[in-house]
Length: 342
Image (tube, rainbow, N blue to C red; front, top):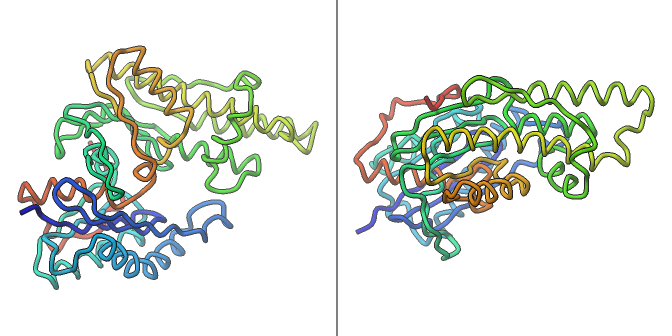
């Protein structure tokens, strides 16, 4: 009989729970914290308090939607890091207490590993199916906190080939959005406005880093300097040029990401590539990867939208692989906010 697993995600500002049975996601529930929009970014203390309020209702909803009870569970997976310490502790403590009370195994999951392994989910909560990415594959993970190129050989054998030396791509987009007065999170707003802009109006720097690493702090600084100088002449800048500026910034970021992905394909000989992370929802990036698929003759896997941002289904994918392999965590384990894939 297939194993049944409850997964919990609380690394940042999304409280999420999912139930997985065998290779099928039965439910995937998320409580989004809207309180942070007023501050232009995630406030750690507010995030942890919201997790405390949300975790019981979200877990209850996930179990009810899946049609399973606590006694049906064979294990509980949770995100141990990386992330915000206070947020992680809420999920870790809840998972440990529940697993200990039920007498079932506890599985700790790396948040970035979960993003990559979301491509291994074949059956989804809405009853649809998709082709899971076979190993090995090359994954470009792009979010507000991370930008990485990862070589995935197995569920527990992931190697980072390159990563950002400073700002993550999503972080750079959010900071640029804040500079020009767009709401938080800024990335989706830049994506929507860029669709109506000219990406060639503003020439922005393209930083070249050694190996397969990335850098986006120079882009953020260049936009800051542009805004300061332009507002000295026109206090309303970017005004009617907002769409053009968004298109120029987005095109610069996407070009940097896809160029590195192209180099990684050439170096590894990968025949399967994947996108992951919150920025994988960006339409320009998704289109560029589809174009790269045709250009280089590789198979591209784009995540379903519900798996782009933080969610518990991706945690369940790693947790189920570990549970089936007999890998579990000690009840002495704790949050690992600085945890990194190597």
